[in-house]
Image 1 (cartoon, rainbow, N blue to C red):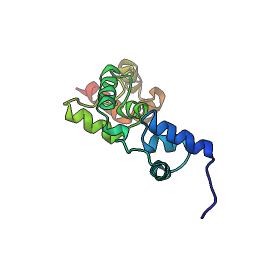
Image 2 (image 1 turned 30 degrees about the vertical axis):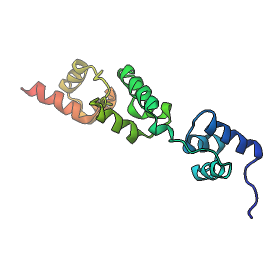
Image 3 (image 1 turned 135 degrees about the vertical axis):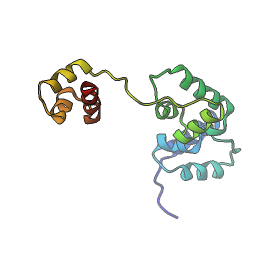
Image 4 (image 1 turned 120 degrees about the horizontal axis):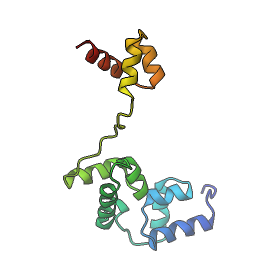
Length: 149
């Protein structure tokens, strides 16, 4: 047999989180600092009844979907997924199944178009204007096209 890498207290904590809190292998493994398969082996060795992981819980699904809908534009799918201990693709699939479209990660356009136009009219190069205003060169190019019209 190999040497024991984890203390008895870690093993007991893992089994308690599994049995009492209903946590899944991956979430427990993250806390303990081991692989999910290690947790699975401990659960099987202890003869504990298997339960579906948190990703299969209807209650978890409802909580995660509700949290995403209530977050307005403040949180991304990945942030909500992480908070609820599910994978991004799992939450994305749940949202799609319920007809909820993912929010666009775009930032609101907060650039001063008038100031950009002024700099372009003064003869500054587009790349310099973009650097000065912290925006993309394509935005500067679009503003330049509107000036020409």
